[in-house]
Length: 177
Image (cartoon, rainbow, N blue to C red):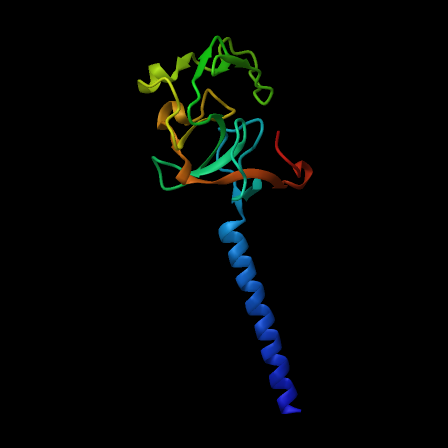
């Protein structure tokens, strides 16, 4: 009987060890949970929302990404506006990427006369295009967002992944728009 108990114990130990290894690998390379901190992505994301970040996503324009902040020891969550090689500007609350005007349905401008101040990459950084290996990001709550207009271009190597799925609060479960 003692031998069977020992075999059973080692069987459970191997199963638990395998599960821990699988969870570690998934968390390290496939996905990670994050908690939104702050209001720079309102109304899309609220403070304390909990999200799943996909580390395998190919980042595209208008994706919401999480990255290591270049100016602080924390992670930021913002929307990708400019990809490498893009020109980006804002004129009279209209976003222009590569000369094409884009609607931004995720913004809630309210009664403000100008929600996002006018800018161009040339005015902000002295370059007309998003440099290779970087992104230009903006928060959805433009008047208060600390984004690329302030912190500069975001290195692709600092990106953790794309915020794919909100799992808390429960009444807002799903893919943020």
